[in-house]
Length: 76
Image 1 (tube, one colour):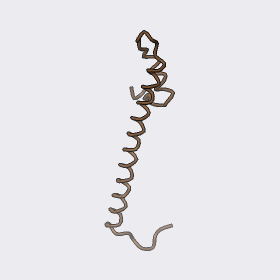
Image 2: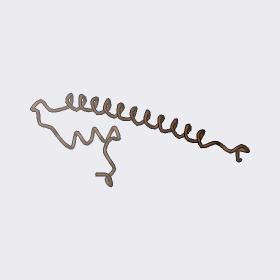
Image 3: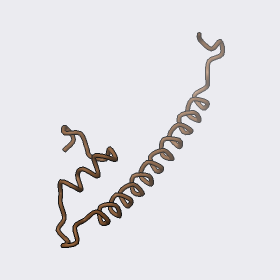
Image 4: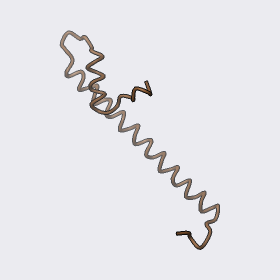
């Protein structure tokens, strides 16, 4: 259903700026959540690492995969 009154360009610009602000907030929150998750994964990995100090790339990748943080094959 169409709005009987056309919107002004100023109204449209205001709405687009609001959406842009919301997207910026969401992107910032995503990055913060991602950093927190990576820090938790790092701590978990260190707890699970063998005492001899050897690191396993496979184990690290498995932890990242569990959290859904590995890029898809086409992104690598």
